[in-house]
Image (cartoon, rainbow, N blue to C red; front, side):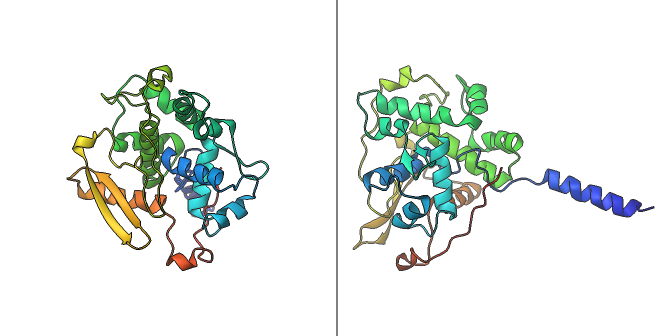
Length: 274
């Protein structure tokens, strides 16, 4: 009898089934603000119709398979802002945001982008007209529903919170609303052109905080090149929150050894998961 061998095989099979994924292409792993910056550059720099590899090179990414570029592309497709069937092209929804034809188009486009993510439907239905929970609680739901590792689930949960806040689907009392009509009347904050190395103002860490609760911190990377990081966050954070911020920043930025090596530095390849 090969009882031990059979038990080992069963155990190995069970481990594979229980293994949680470190990444996903069902949920965006970069938030809507990052995706809008990404798609906006494709539009303003005239990169439409180019191949993904050509777009990645023009934008300073190592390759179309590098993690930062791959996650931005997947996020843009999930939000319904990019079509990559024949080159990289902006969708009609993306044009509604970047080239609106009426006052409500831009606001409606953001809400529609959120609803375009099929995997967001369960979250939207579960918390519609309810107070959106803290990221850690939401991460537990994502982890269980999508079989993700804890850190990946936390990233996806943070991305969801940041994205619905940018889309103004979170009311002042913290409740989640999926109504486009009630938010389209409120003007969006004016956009400011960003320079290389700056973080757009919508990339705010910390859900449900008003500007009065936050402090702005500035880190100059290169004064001559006007490269700096702007971080808006609460004045007091915990050690665990600091760790989450560090992990979040590692996902958002395309990190290279030096700016001169951006065209040759190879990033780890993100293997699409089914």
